[in-house]
Amino acid sequence: MTASNLLTTAPPYEVEQAMKRLGANLRTARLRRNLTIDEVAAKIGTGPRAVMNAEKGKPSTGAVVYLALLWTYGLLDPVTALADPAKDEEGLTLELARGRTRARAKDELDDDF
Image 1: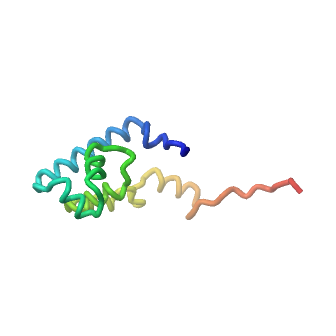
Image 2 (image 1 turned 90 degrees about the horizontal axis):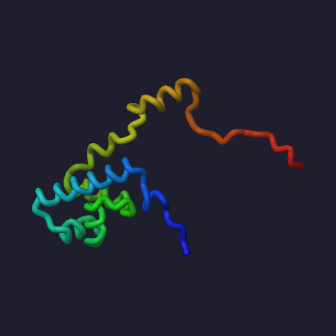
């Protein structure tokens, strides 16, 4: 038996609400384009259940389904700006304070001979 992923079964409230809004927005985009769930599923190469789950904002739905739906509706461009390192003010501040270019594990001496 596999362990369930807590993030997909009980995500933080803000994440859950964002997923539901995204799903509703995807549904609206599909309806405005007068496309059926089956047509969209065929275009992205998946089954109708995946499209329905994305439109419900189910967290267990893979990110690739959400991104493919955005692509289908011509709405993928704004996604490229997500987590843009140039706009990550906190990350830039931390980087400047540390002067590091990549993360490394801490080198600790091991006295276990």
